[in-house]
Image (cartoon, rainbow, N blue to C red; front, side, top):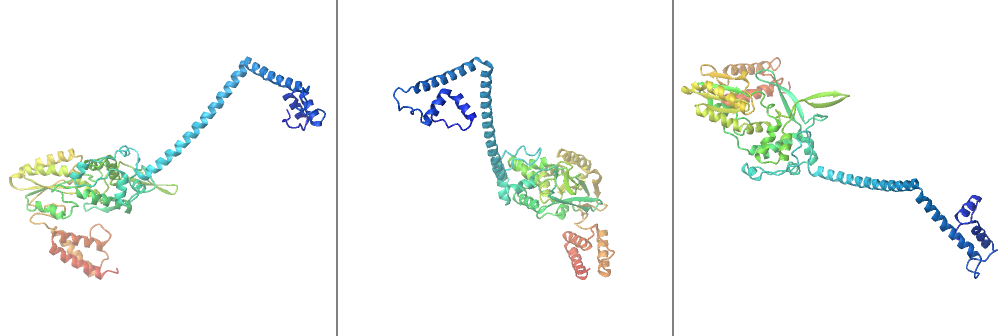
Amino acid sequence: MSDLPQPRTRQELYDRIRQTSREEVILEEMIRLGFWPAEGTVPEDPADEIRLRGEIWRELSDLYKQNRTLHNEAELKKQVYQQRLAESRRKRQETKERRERERLLRGEAWRQKKQQDIVYLGDRVSGGLNYTECDRQRLQSYNLPEYGTAEQIAAAMGITIGQLRFLAFDRKTSTVSHYVRFKIPKKTGGDRIISAPMPRLKQAQYWILSNILEKVELHDAAHGFRPGRSIVSNAQPHVGAEVVINFDLKDFFPSISYQRIKGVFRSFGYSEAAATIFGLLCTKPDIEEVELDGKTYYVALSERHLPQGAPTSPAITNILCRRLDRRLSGMAENIGFVYTRYADDLTFSASGDNLRHICNILRRTESIVAHEGLAINEEKTRILRKSGQQEVTGVVVNEKPNVDRKILKRFRATLYQIEKDGLEGKHWGNSPDLIASIQGFANFVAMIDPQQGAAFQQQVRRIREKYRST
């Protein structure tokens, strides 16, 4: 009892009496004031009875309280409920803290994974990014390097995972475009849309071209965009033929989809992940620029396809057309025709009795091209006989590779007029840059007829020197 603090107010005194008893409080005050000896100093102290009675009373009070609680079912249920509620809150708090720790760990693991791998590149193109196993034997058969993961590809290209993700990501709407689009006039009229990749994407595409695409063996009938081949080598096999048949493939580049290009890389033996990344780097959708609140957005209008203007596109078309070239070349050889292809221009030629198969060539070519997922532009199909001028990819082939005489005559006259009177009022071709146009045509003539072309090139150099400051 002596351990209790001295009451300072009347309320504290009342509280102390309720905690002990009135007699014990009086006894403690008498001992404190010196009217009664302290506990343990007097043998058989009468005050011990007061203390014992107080302890017994407190025990009885606790028992009465427990008894009331046990007999009060509502109070008992309330206590059980409060205990369960407290336990539930404790568990919820523990679960919340555990989930927060797990969320932070997952976030850190995700950040680390994003630094080392690519797991998402857009809707409907990301399904195979977890499959990184290559077909090593098939890659070796093509003599191609093995790259199965995004990390390996990025390291080989000399860029980071983040940069590779940025270049390959398939966005339906974006504030960034990896291509610059412009139009150039076609020789036959109209405009050709060119999609030129920006420097970082162009660098990645050149890497794909030099490390993968250029190592794949092509069919001998393909002459476009190959070292040592040209429009002249494409025209040469048809020189002197009695009949020349020209076909043009309709919408050649746009008709080659992302899925087909991805399939090409898969056929080499590359993993699903690597083929997806390569396919995305080499394709683009048609887009429309939209201005909204002073900001430019690029909205995809079509599925991804081969862009005309990327350094990888011509090589991919040659690879994709290997089977087409093999089938058309085999068909032509069986009926006495010669076949070559320059990009989207297909050419057949023959002489003598083999001319009876012209209808067969027309019908079977259309069938084979359609089976390969392409289409013939029927408006550009031409059957040229020896009695008229025969052209193959702009080269006259009646007797030898040559340039149209009428065009040469007009070009010679144009150069004379420019050299005599100046650049003003003169034009050649559809380009606004006159000097570039005449230089390009002079180079074209030199490729077909080196002697005549050299004379034109020399004349263009004189014009350049004379009108350099104009």
